[in-house]
Length: 162
Ligand code: HEC
Image 1 (spheres, protein in one colour):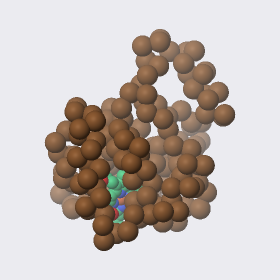
Image 2: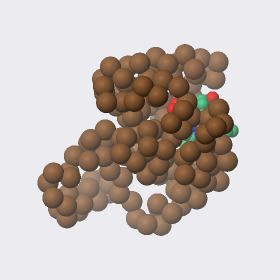
Image 3: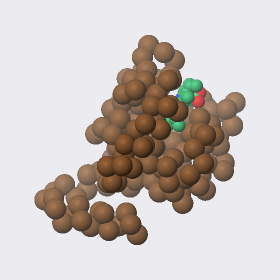
C-alpha cells in the first residue's frame, strides 16, 4: 500500500511514457541503508558498484535486472543462498537491499514495468533457498528461459562475465 501510494505520486509527477519503466522508489534514508547493507554484506564479493571481474563471481552491474524477466528468475534472486541466508533479519531491509541491487546496480536491465520486491514476498521466498549443489544447473535453466522470453537479454548472461 505504501508502495502503491509512492508509485502513484511518482506516476503523477512524470510523463506517461516513463510510467512503464522499472522502478524502485523509497525514501532516501531507506536507499542509503540498503546501499550500506549491500556494501557490508555483498560488496566484498560483488564489488562496491556490482562489478566483480575478474573474480569468479557474477557481474551484477548493468545486467542483474534481467532475472526479473520470469517469475522463477525473480524468485532466484531471493532464493540464492547468499541472499536468503544474509544476516539481515528484517525482510523489508533485505527487500530494499535487493531492490538496490536490481534497480540501481542493475541499471537499465530490469524489464519495463518490473515490480520492486517487498518484505512479504522476501519473507516467503527466503524460506526456500536453492540447494547449493544444484545452483549452477538451476541458473543455466533459468537463464535459457529468460533468453527465450526476453530476447534482448545478452548472451553473456549465460556465464558470469559482464
Ligand atoms: C562470499 C561471496 C559472496 C557474497 C558475500 C555474496 N555473494 Fe552473491 N554470489 C556469489 C557467487 C559465487 C555467486 C554465484 C552463485 C553461487 O555460487 O552462489 C553469487 C550470485 C549472486 C547473484 C546471481 C547473479 C547471477 O548472475 O546469477 C546475485 C543477484 C547475488 N549473488 C547477489 C548477492 C547479494 C544481494 C548479496 C548480499 C546479500 C550477495 N550476493 C552476497 C558470491 C557472493
